[in-house]
Image (cartoon, rainbow, N blue to C red; front, side, top):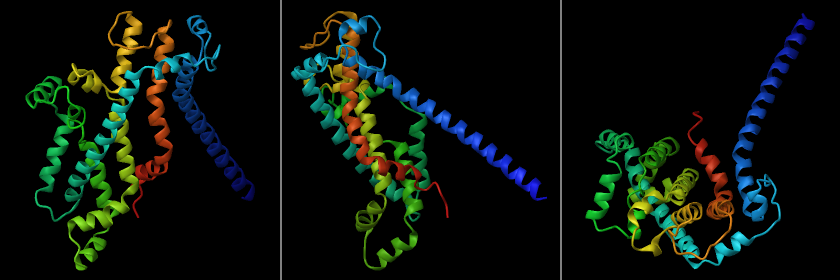
Length: 299
C-alpha cells in the first residue's frame, strides 16, 4: 500500500512538473514575441544607415549612432507636437476619469431609480455607433474642427471603463460603510470623495492608464479633425506624416528631419513616441495589477 501511494504521488508530482514547464515555456515564448520586435526597432534606430540597408541589424545596433534622435530633437515642430500630445493626454485623462466617476458611482447605488435602463443605454453605445462620417459632421456643426477640444471631448467617456468602475465600487464598498457615513450626516459627495475614491485607488489608476494609453496612441481623429491648424497636430500624427514622407519621397510636412534611409526614421520615431508612456507605466504598475484583480475573488 505504501509503495503504491508513493508511486501515485511521484506520478502526480511529475505530471504537475510537466505542466509547469509547459506553462513557463508558453509564457517565455509570448514574452519574447512581444519584446524582440521592439528591441529590433531600438537597435535599428541606433544603427548606421549602411548596416540597416544591408539588413545586418537584428537585436544589437551596428555602427552605433544617435544621428536620428539628434535630428528629431533638433526639429522644433516635433517637440511642439510632443507638448501637444502630453497636454491632450493629461486633459483627456482627467476629464475622462471625472465623467466616468460621476456616472459610475450613482449607477452602483441600489437606491437610484432607473439605473438598469441607464446602464442599458450606456451598454448600447458599445455595440452600435454612428460611424466616422456622422462624427465628422457633428464636429463640424459644433465648430470644433481645428480645435484642441475635438481631440479631447469625443472620446473622453468610455462605457467599458464605466462598467468596470461601477462593478468595482459595488463589490469593494460595503453597504454598511455607506450607511454608517449617512448616520454621521455625510452626503453623496462626501461619501464619494472621502470613502469611495480612497478605497478605489487601484481601479482608478488602472482606468487612468487605459485612458492615457488610448489617447496617446490615437491619431485617426487628429487626422480627420486637424487640417489647417498644424500647431495642434499631436506627436503620433506628426510622426505618421514623417514616415509617409520618408517612404513615398514627397513633401507632406514641413520638417528639418532628413535621413537617407526611411527605415531608420521609422524606427527612431516609433521609439520616440513609445518612450514617454513606457516611462510612466512602472510608476503605476502596482496599482494596475491590484486594479485588474479587484473583485476577482469572492469571499
